[in-house]
Length: 614
Image (cartoon, helix red, strand yellow):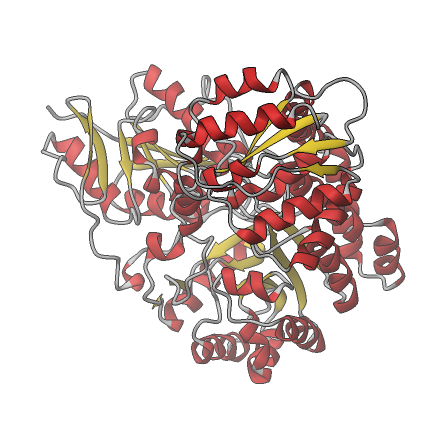
């Protein structure tokens, strides 16, 4: 049965919280482009970008026959809220964007359809088919429910001829002022030839680098650039093809277009002096560069080919041509620890970065990193509004989640300090004076939001510590017994075992152990029970370190309740995993030492001494 569709509303949900560029609203391209395609096909279209204006949907004069909502992970909760509202009104809802593309099952709990991947062809086909009452069930890139089951159709080939897509009509945006009050996004390419571990671009747009012709880009600059005071080239890598970028800049200069623009580039772009000179002359104000880390091991883990020296050269070289640099660093890789964050702050001051974001590594759906964290059961939060790069939502290897969150906030405060504001003020760099003051204001404004999350993580850390302390007898614990049989039962390796013993010794704890376990006719658990019975007379508490990273220790120790009786209230069981070994050690250490900073120092000193890689 046909459902007449005349009016289509697109919504780009607002971010859950502000960031340092919140006052510079740059609409994402998806909704505007799709709206333009449907408008050219005869539909009445309106686009709401909530960062620009947020109407009251209950009283809005535009009554849609279909609603399309695009979201990234951090805006997914808001997208679902809007989808639920319109479905309650009997209006069909289509979800799209990166988050829904990779988690269509979740999206279909709130929407009628999900468009996965590129929607330039799939959405118009769906709308036309619905209007005609045709069979939409075979439309590629479409996900939907049929008989209570989720059905995901295959994806169609990516759009090869990007010039075939229309120039986005920003005047479709509700509240849009075409008098230079806003910024516009212009995409000159799709896809990325690189493979960063925490990025979903390849799965969403492919590895092949597809481009618009320079003629087409110039036309779009002339049409949309006149409406804005700033153009953001929203390509994932604007300089992936440097010769093409040079050609575009040359055309801008030849046509004498007086525009101010910015773009996302990689570190390698700063090796090309001719490119930087042309970019500067053509109006480039700032580049956004994924600097990622100053830790070589982390760069390798992220699949980044750059070096610390090339990162430094990148900032210096762009500055030579008067182009500002906004650096983006990502903390929390398995190779990172607290000193990496603190050294990064010093590095950023030394190279005189103009602005930056210290982001927390986030397992965004669709990325290889998300898959890894899911498989390793390391995701600790599924509140998507926290997936904005500013919240620790997984279990890091060499931080507790609380420390990763705290150190990142501390680093941001250090960079956007009042002395840094004064430095820009003396240089009369008014844009960055305002930006840095606004950044400080945001950190002050967000203190409750961030502080609440920091406090939540701190409570999670110490809740486990309290559980452990309840196992301890009253008074100060001086002697800790560790049954030798547990090393064999839990398949402990030599280095982690040596580390744990030295770590406890550095805490001032005396280790009480029986001799190495010998072959016995008794069951391993029986032998362990006998050993615990002997140790309970010699030690204040008996530590039972279970190594869960290897073997099936927990299964082999399923008679643990019986062991607890043998220990007469002295047993302290604690599970150690390879991916959270640090956190387990800190939790154990907090039973004997209250200062987290001292425990952290002892941990890394012991790690260096033992030379262990756990």
